[in-house]
Image 1 (tube, rainbow, N blue to C red):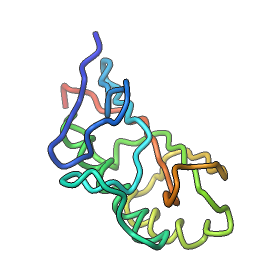
Image 2 (image 1 turned 90 degrees about the vertical axis):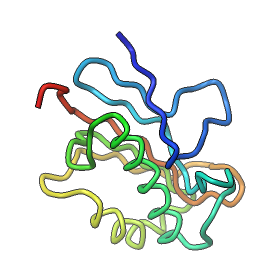
Image 3 (image 1 turned 120 degrees about the horizontal axis):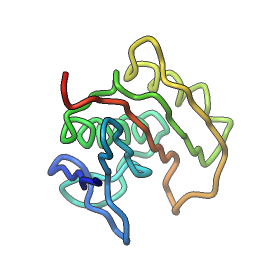
Length: 128
């Protein structure tokens, strides 16, 4: 059975999708960007600022599902400019404890001004 996950500390969806879905022991978080949950506006001018906001949005959704960043098993990252990878990676590494999740990072065309978009899959059994 699918359970929709929302959080007051994460942005509301701007299209026909759920911010996150729990199915059994797995939590699937939709692609998140540097959107301020209160204003719904893109925030941050640097890759570091946008990465932090994006990961805080993901953290809020995971927590609403009873999970944490430590439960992430797969991460997909879209960068507007792959040349920002090392700067992005420095912030990213602060959010995920060892063992780090599997990850794919690609350069993609994102919304105007958006530098990063991230989605995650977490394994978080409800019976812990």
